[in-house]
Length: 219
Image: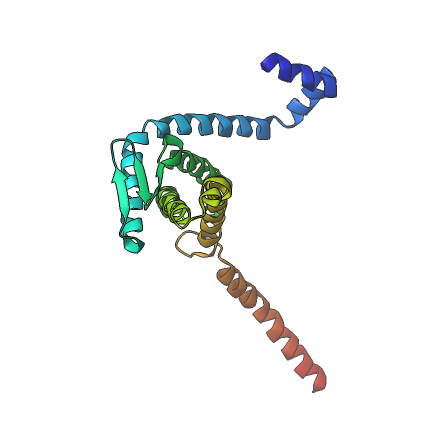
């Protein structure tokens, strides 16, 4: 694979050009490699947590389904959960550990990139918060999938919803978490409200001086 990638790179640009690009952009390239390695390492670490995550996911999904349905079946031996005649098996990749690993990488990158604008040490709370949100939303996703399938829309549940709901919820959670932390005085040192107040305070002496000059000219 590495030889194939090198061949394609050399076919696109000569080796001297690649060396020049590496010398000029070594810092962002190093950051990308570190993030890629962190994603793989965190994913493998989270995969080892599959058994407890799967059990917790099964319990939460079962609880959510019993809130709206009386015909719920849950088998902890093979992680099967269903409602009526529709059931699914919570596979390791459906337990939420992949989303949690990606959330860790995303939040860690955000903490480093915006470290000067965040309040410490409370900014570290964004990591466990992102973990809990990803895990809970994954449980809601599975419960919704079972309800959709049990309502007669099996193709939608196993097709579009199953494949799209995961990455859509991930993007919404991560972007929402970043936006909230930027507007929260608990996490951020430069909220939009404080920036507006500082701008008004800065402009106040200028306004007063202009008013005084106008009064003097009129007199």
